[in-house]
Image (tube, rainbow, N blue to C red):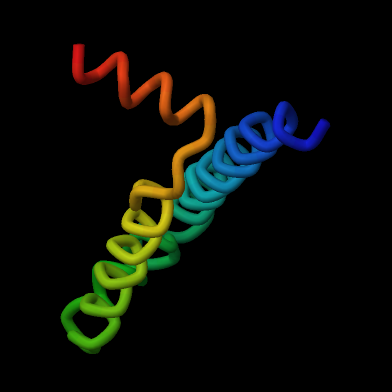
Length: 86
């Protein structure tokens, strides 16, 4: 039951996050200036706090490794693995 809902949840959550960020940035830039946006804050912090830049890169690297690291074989992954070797 949950197996079918997980991709929908991940996609919707990601879309909501990205769209919210974009909408807020546009609103903040139009209401005040570029310096009010989240994007500018991240850009500024990357110069002020190099550890922040490392931390963000490490976090996304860790997340990518977590998502795509090889897991134990199930019937589905075994079929995919066998198909890629043919």
